[in-house]
Amino acid sequence: EKTLREIERIPELLKHTKEFDFSFEKDKKYTFVGCGSSYNLGYITTEMLRKNGYNAEIISGGNVIVFDKVPESDVAIFLSRTGESTETVKAVEHFKKRKIKTIGITCEKNSTLTKVCDESFVFDFANEESVVMTGSFVFILNFLLNGIEKHELSNESIEVVKNVESIIDKIDLKKFSHFVFLGFEEQYGISKEGALKIQEMAIQNVEFHEPLEYRHGPKSLVTDKTLVIINSKDTKEERILAEELRVMEAEVIFVGENGDLKIPYKNGFESPLKMILPQYLGYKKALTEGHNPDKPRNLSKSVIL
Ligand code: F1P
Image (cartoon, rainbow, N blue to C red; front, side):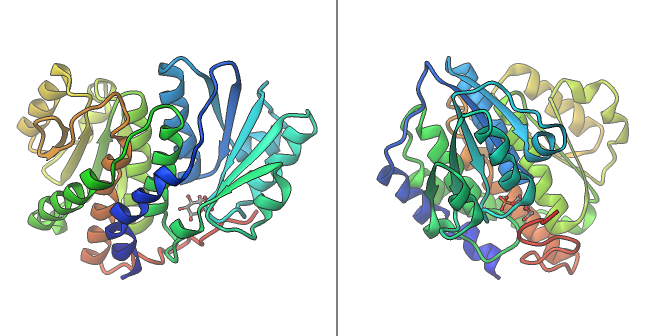
């Protein structure tokens, strides 16, 4: 399957990170624009920029084009793997009209996005055949976070791919029909994107919440068919929550320093590695349910409006 190949080449993709010299600047205000997974890329990057003292904001392409909503900014960064999502491409002119610098980030070199933006980064080596973004998401996220602080994740990702496969392959996925992703701040963005992977590939009921918010209502839905993934910041509260959910008979995969999947919290710079679990989980659950993970139903590689 293409999706599996695209996940397993993540360590190779991450090696390319050092070829690019890109840094965010503290005296500039950045606005990110994207749809779907590309929106989530912008969301996580915005959270990371803000907590490191930068000025950034995220807005969906839809919000820009329907309401002509253009946040004040010095630079607008348009994210789109295909460079063709209608809302993202159309959003560019709304920013240009206000004389804001536009930068496209895409995997498709002759895409419309590269034609309409002032400048572009094109990662054609990270392009994918599958409809669902996997490796390209991990690469672009690591590229963006390296604009804040340099982190070489290629070697660590070899181990993570191996560990993820061994954890997920041991679970009887047939049993689960309800998936929940939990995380704070940038981990919330990771959880939102994790949820999208399970929806797109495996066509399942999925939720994502902040960890402690989950206790205020949503946990009513927990049964022994619930699989919870906690993208932790290694806090005491998240550990207690994991125990509470296990008592309620949910299966919990704790991702963190001493978690079931060991990825120590590094102020969010480890986030690209945390995407590998939901990507592989979505792929495996799709196979279990007889769905084609490379080409999910009701979805195309770029959504045209
Ligand atoms: C955005 C996107 C993908 C989604 C699907 C439809 O694409 O929403 O995130 O998985 O493929 O399109 P793009 O703008 O990044 O090409």
